[in-house]
Image 1 (spheres, rainbow, N blue to C red):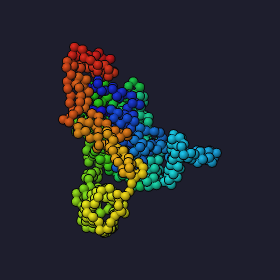
Image 2 (cartoon, helix red, strand yellow):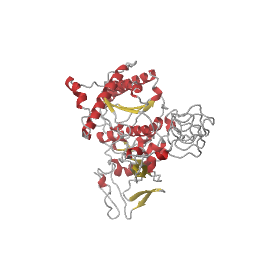
Image 3 (cartoon, rainbow, N blue to C red):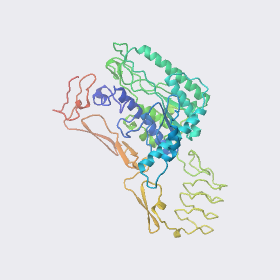
Image 4 (cartoon, rainbow, N blue to C red):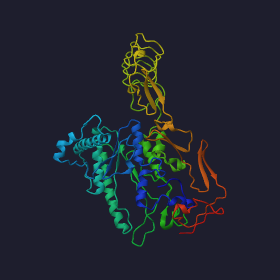
Length: 534
């Protein structure tokens, strides 16, 4: 895990700040990919699900065996991940006595029933119904490939069966998390590692064969991650200890395989620029580079990458990967400039309308701009902007904007309609307050409110602009050179690092300091901060 590019000189201020030698810390960091906690409580896959859901995709998330923060997003946007057993979807046990009284226990008892009680009842009924539906659909799916009866083999078989239920679940995108342990080889590394490799190889081979049989190989990408690598120099127990940078893999039908990305160390001695004591290697490639390309392959727009990978801006462009170098079939994302004759599922690549001729039937969805020529039949829904050409018959739905030209037939008089309550004036915009006053709808814009991430753009390239779940803008600076003798700031010109007067930090020792407070974070005495080797 890296939160910006690093070398031996500046290891002290950063190196142990993230507690990189602790398994539990680094396992969490490798799933979150958010070292500065700009999206607290979320994981990188969960944030991908958030932005895809906001773009209209139907996303499912599954963790096999237990909760994983990697899949955690904003539950109000993409929902919560479903946890299943290693062997599949478990049957929910409810005693006969509870079954007989389940509906009566969780129905709406009174008009003013408590909110928390009703929420609890609603959620538990939804969970029971969802479990039953998923279990029934899961049992219908059979695999043609024989999966090994290992932990990883069972998990990947469950994943393939869950993929088979996608139509019944009504989703177009799924995310899955599986896990295998046993790599903490402080002793007998050769024997343990050989057994783990056999388990991984056999499970992945079966997984690939089943995806190919189901014609899904090109639609699935798998990435393998780990908390950290191991020391190149063994310990006295014929094992290895916790290290840092390592090798990881990604594969799938759309992946351009047989490539090694990143920078391979050219000097493995203690004098090597990327080598620390006992063969611990400082990484040269951030996880952000991998997940950024996966997000692009999934269809995440460039404007949403800062939310998915909030730390991308901390790295030089050459440290990141181009999605076209890693994947086949990456398509650009040009906007649709003009409406088509019928609503499309994806934007066209042309900036011109498909046809200038009249459509034969009305569109089922409103267009975003007026038609070039009138249609022969009225539209089923009003357009978002007024037509410049009169229709032959009145619209069945009142528009919010007057027509440029009169219609041939009179429409119903909108001036006679009067609102009676605030609910009749709602526009489903969280940033507006809609009131009904004297029969007319009045709209006020809430100050400081945002609806999408673009609302929060502050015009600075060195900030990450996010609209959070409370519809408030959060603009976080990415400027941090990890030099305690500079004052870091961001303006429209970019990152600014102003040197503090009479401040110089000198770090002593091969591995730097044990605690960040030792690294000149409080003050500099006589222009120098010197700490003894620990």
